[in-house]
Length: 130
Image (tube, rainbow, N blue to C red; front, top):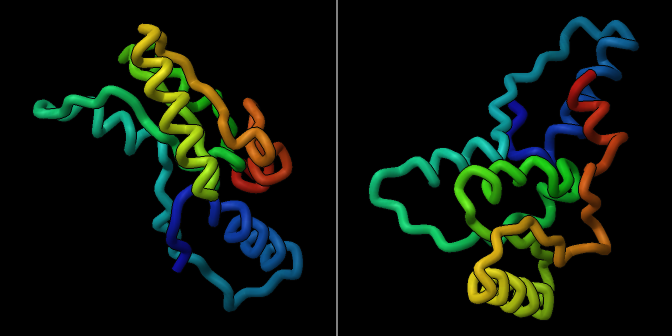
């Protein structure tokens, strides 16, 4: 069973592709992987939701990049900051998010620049899409 978000999908896809290449007939995967941007959209479309900003997951964003979150800023005018995992990353992301809100901006900012690029990880995305 393949469970997780975009972070686990490239590994699962690689296993499926390798099994296919090696003609392994007794291999199967039940994938219940989730995708982060649609989950965020579902939150935004809730009737009783009042979201000022998102601290977006760095591990997912290292795979998908920052571009998939652009709809949040464009359609909903809500700020987003992609955050790393260290305490300083979290503090800096909160600062960046609050600053955007105070300045009346709605942008997708990458705090976790050491791992996240706007277009994501091409190799991982190619595996998922193959």
